Each structure stands twice: as structure tokens, then as C-alpha cells.
Image (cartoon, rainbow, N blue to C red):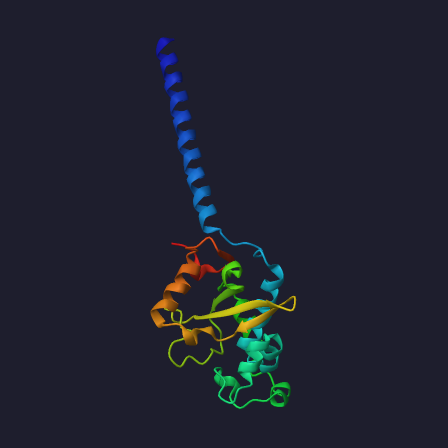
Length: 215
């Protein structure tokens, strides 16, 4: 009986040890999942999120009229300059913009329909009165990339597109639609990776596809 008793005690101890190990493993897995699942349904500014998505659709589809109508007063003035900083708007007028056709319809929707893209927002509203959005995706019709402005260095099949929104007359407006021109390559790459890796509390991730999962 004593021998059987000791066997029973050992059996109970083994079971408890096994349960403890399993519980610890599950806790670690849950913690790891929590760390990688950092996606939010919306940022602190859901109305701005909606405008950003419309702006990205206009940019990737080559919708000049859409871009112009979403633009802030300063951006619209810039786009109408004879030597506009955006080469797609060289020598354009309001008349030619309004009559222009969408160059690549559904380019944006087709790219995000795969689910393998990244979308995040960097909240700089209090400091600089603006929100910076970053979209990284693999579109069929790529944006012209004269000096690797849009190339995502971690995976060159993808393009990284940053835009800026400001609030003007109570509405969110597109302030910068091609913001890479003023940023050096090394700084741009670091900025992109900081947002993807969420290295700042100001970053909110709105979508993180398979390619962009944390390692």
C-alpha cells in the first residue's frame, strides 16, 4: 500500500508539473501573440484615416482630379505651378485636371485585396499640426520610381508611400502627396522601418499583412 501510495503521489506531482509547463507555454504564446497583434481598427482620428485611404486610392489609380480635390490650399497651389514638384502635374490647369481620366482604375483596390500590405499613421498633430500616413504595398501598376523614392528596401517588390494630412477649415486635407522628395534616402529608410516596427508611441498600425509581421 505504501508503494502504491508513493506512486500515486509521484503521479500527482508529474501531472501538476505538466499542467504548470503547459500553462506557462500558453502564457508565453499569448504574450507573443499580443506583441505581434498590434493592429487597431482606427487611429485617434478615424475621419482622417478615411481621407487617407481615399487619397491613397487616388494616388495609386492616377486620379489627378481626385488628388487635387483632396488637396489643401497650399497643395493645390503647388500642383498648379508650371513646374509643379509633382511631375504628374507639370503644366496642368484646373480645366485639364478636371477633364483628366483615371490612369490606372482599381490599382489600389486590387493591391490591398490581397491583404498583404502595411498601413500605419504617425501622429504628429500636436507638434506639427499634421498626421503622416505610410502605406506599403505591391501594386500591379507601380508609381514611377525615378530614384528609388518609393522602393521598400526590406522587400523591393513593394513600394512605400507616405502622405501628410492637415486639418483645414474643419476638414482633413491632403498636404503632401509625394513627400519623399525632401527626404534623404537613409532617413527615409529609417523612418519607414521605425513605423513598421512601431518604434514610437505615436505610431498606430491600421493593417499589417504577412510580409510585415514582426520577426
